[in-house]
Length: 273
Image: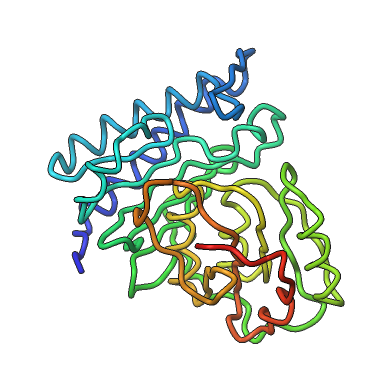
């Protein structure tokens, strides 16, 4: 496994903040919303952050390709040969950005052999920044001060369960009922993973489409803090293994010893991760 130098680590955090600044320059003004072929929304802020990140990463590591949500039409025949690459969501939570509720992030992950080995998640509105490397600690940075993160384990009832503001379905409701005594918290974007990593939330179940750039950076932070991101069959999440860039269903846990398999006991939840 590659080890990032401290200079490279810090340089990527700077890029994430610069992308956040580009987003905030648009956030306070009026902006147009268009839609992509899959009907997901797109704004000038998505594109501005994309440009900042692409230029920054290509300058830092020209030898590593970059896969961004806003430049994702890279053929599988090319991607299949990648060993190490950047996986980027310039603005995770565009719907939250449009609603102006502040619950959106900048996500940058470094993937090696299908596994996230570095991740940074930046919340432009609050200025918070979560970052981690595989096999090392996870941190939340406020200003220039890093605080080491640990998930809440053992987790005790009532479990604090994250739910998406923009995506809910009958399967999610069924699983929430099986959990029993819970405190449900609505939250957007990768912030759900980060709050689990810092111990203020316990579980985030997601049944429905997400893309690989939605989860990779936050997965690294969560796992470095002691948590896990699992497919319903118990496999750890991995990346760039198939032509599609869509994730399967998953459950994010702060305490991996929780009885999550019992919560997912339903034939309707079977999927291929």
